[in-house]
Amino acid sequence: MSNGTDGGIRIEYGVDEKPPLPKSILLGLQHVAVMIVPATAVAYVVANGVGAEADAAYLVQMVLLFSGLATMVQAYTVGPVGARLPIVMGSSFTFVGATIDIGASFGLAAVFGAILVTGFVVEGLIGWQFKRIKPFFPPLVTGLVVVIIGLYLVPVAMDYAAGGVGASDFGALHHIGLAALVLAIAVGLNMFTRGVTRLLSVLFAIFVGYATAIALTFATGLELVDFSSVGSAAWIALPSPTRFGFEFEPIAIATFAVLFLVSSMETVGDMSGVTAAEGRNPTNEEFRGGLFNDGLLSSIGAVFSAFPITSFSQNVGIVNFTGVMSRHVVGIGGVFLAVLGLSPKVGAAVTTIPSAVFGGAVLLMAGMVAASGFRLVVTHVDLDRRNTVIVAVSLGLGLGVATTPEALAGLPSGAELFFGQSVIVTALSALVLNTFVPGTESPLFDAPPTDAEPAADAVDAEPASSVDD
Image (cartoon, helix red, strand yellow):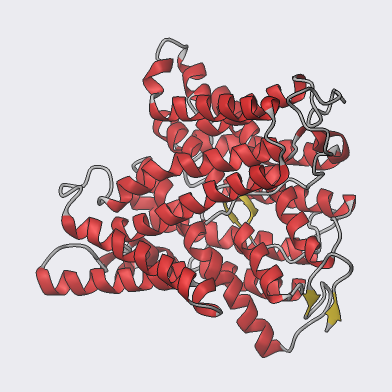
């Protein structure tokens, strides 16, 4: 047991310390329990969004497998890849909107082709040149990106809460009731309990909602849960390389290149959040290894049809909450994830959860993502005239293309798809405005305060990331 340095928290186990094996297993399982719902929700939402419901179980399986592999590499490293830090990896909601749009327009082959090309190329370049790129992504830019990710997902969550787009009984009372039950239990446990019930409030809520749906299926005859796919699924199966094939659409590659740029900033924030427990910032070697891990495992995962892998913020919260910084604990969690990813039965079981149950959980997750972005902006950014205008323009444009995509119908089809991504529009708007408008946040200018800009020093905070749940 050790103490944190100045500005840190009390550390129960340091990065290289190994808790007793029974305790390590339980702590590792806690990390898995916290991230498994949002990680598998990404695969579930995308599969339904692109009309690949028949492949949902396999996509869930690959998300779990490569989340586990990336987590182990992050904890122990392979050459220059990995940070040797307790960071849990998984599929992020950052990519959901673009994956659905590109998958629906060009097919999943174009999605995985774009991930294959841009994953390690973009994040590898960022890791290599991190010191030069970092000033362009202050909390003003990264915070706005986090906000728009959450806001974009709210309508998606509502569709699921109502039973899923295309459901014959869309909006039926039993769907809304299940979603409301999950949301109420998750909020109640999070706000009025402590300890493990608070940390695992979303997981408990989904369990209750799922149990209720099963009970309704047997009691009323409603076909809310169908276990037939679980019974026919194998216990163990190896992944299938190039299951969906590869296509290399320029617009898809450009879209994912920007999104990997955004994702890299999430990872930077999460790494900073972990080392903050020790009262320090990550070293350049840790940043470089962590970003290499993001990009390389995402590209390799694309060969097996896994969606992009990045760090999970809620697990950073567990590290700070428990004071357990041991990378060996996180490595054990990665082993559990990888083992689960080798079982088609696990993926099939996840797909039996009704859309409405997932909807109640995703609605909360989306709201938490947006809230964490707002908190980042409000806490670390001086909202003077300059920064307020950047917030207004970036969010206005992002929400505009999200809510009224037909406004871009006059653009060429490729441009319509690219600029129809709310995350990209918000990120590019915030990046360009922050870079070229003089102010203390700009990496190009060191302008003196104007009459509308207080002279107080800006907070030099590390970029933070989205709450992936």
